[in-house]
Image (cartoon, rainbow, N blue to C red; front, side, top):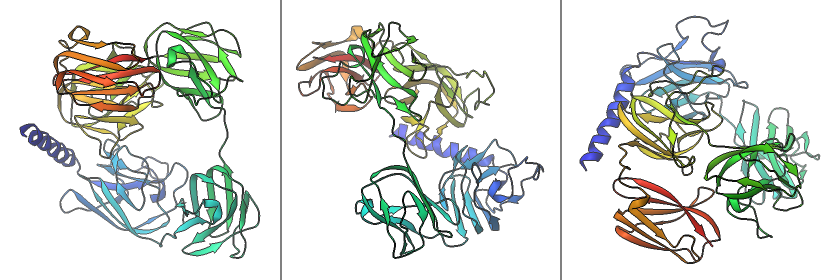
Length: 501
C-alpha cells in the first residue's frame, strides 16, 4: 500500500512539475497560418496565444483554421519553443501528448480549449462535420464510416468489401454512380458495382461526388521456416514467421533463431523459396538446395530483398532516448549514435541498462539509432515505472531518479527499477525434461510467482502462478517447436528456451 501511495505521489508531482514549466501556450501550425519559423511567420512570439487564469486551462476564441494539407495541421506548444509541445491524431477533441502527431482540423472558426496538465483539448464550433458512410450489400451488412480529411473530402482505409452494390450516405441521404473503381456519385438512383477485395483507401468528395476505390497491393507472403526457426513446415500449413513488407520487395521482421537450418519461402508453399550458405549475412539463391545454417541462438531482426536477394540476420542495438534521459531526443543528424545504449546477454531477448539517471520528462526505446523500430507504451498515457511497449507507442513518462532498466524485445515488457538477478541464474532452477513430449517440470530455490509460456512470435499462450518452488506445465496440447518460459520470482525474472517434441 505504501508503495502505491508513493508512486501516486510521484506521478502527481511529475504532472505538477511538468505543468509548472509552462508559462504560455499557443496554437501553431500550417492550418493556423504557418509553422513558427516559416518565412511568412518568423517572429519569436507565436501568433495564436491562448489565455489562462490558472496556468493549466487555456482558451483561444474565434480562431480561423484551414483544412490541413499533407504534413500540415496544428499543435499546441509552450513558451514559444518546441521543447514542450502536444499533438494527437484526433479531431475535434482528444488528448495531446509530448511530440505527438499533428492535429488535422477541418476548415472553420473555433473556440479551442486545452489543459496543459492532462493534454485534453477540444475544438468547438466550425461548420458541422457531415456523417459519411459507405452503405450497401458490398459492405457485408455493416455500414463503413468515413473520416473527414477536409471540409469536403472523406476517406476510409483498409476496407474489405464483397461483390455487390454500394452508395455513399451523407447525413442519411444516399448517392451512387454506375462505374467502378472510380466515378461520380451524385445520383440517389444509381448503385456502384463493387468488386470484392481489400482496398487501401476509398475516397469520396461530398461537393463534387468524385469517388475512388483504390485496391490494396497484393504481395507474396514470405516466411522464415526450418529447424532453426521453429521447425520445417508440415504441409499443408500456414507459416508462422511471416515477414512484413510495404512494397513486395523488401521484407523484414523479428524471428527467434536457434541452431539449425532455415529458408525463406513464399505463400506457404515450396513453389518459390530461397536458400543460402552463409549466416548471418549472405546472398540467397532462388529455389536452391542449400539451407541457411543458423549457428546461433537469439531474437534476430531479419531483412530480405527479393530484388537483390541479399539477406541479413542481426541483433539490433536498443537505446533509451527522450527528454527524460541524459541524451535527450535524437536530432536526426546523419550518423547520429544514440546514448543510453542497453546491453543484451541472451541474444537480443532481454536488454538491460544499470544506473540510468532520469529527469522528469518522457522516454522511448528505439533500435539501431533510427525511428524505424521503436517502442512506447501500449496505452495513452503510458505507464511508469513498468508497462508493455509496442511499436510506435506513446511516450513513456519518466520520474526523476536513478534506475536499473530492463526491456524484453520479444514481449515489449519494460521496467524501471532495481535489478536483482545476480542470484537468479540457471544454477538456481531446473526445467526437465527439455525437450518434452508431455510435461515440463520446473523447480527453483526461490518461490516461483509466475511462469509465462511464449511462442516464437512473442504471443503469451499460457500463464500460471505456482506460488511454490515447483510447478508442472502440461505441454501435450502444444504444437511441436520452440517456446520460451519467462519465470518470475519476487526478486527477478529469467527467460529460458523450451522445446516441444
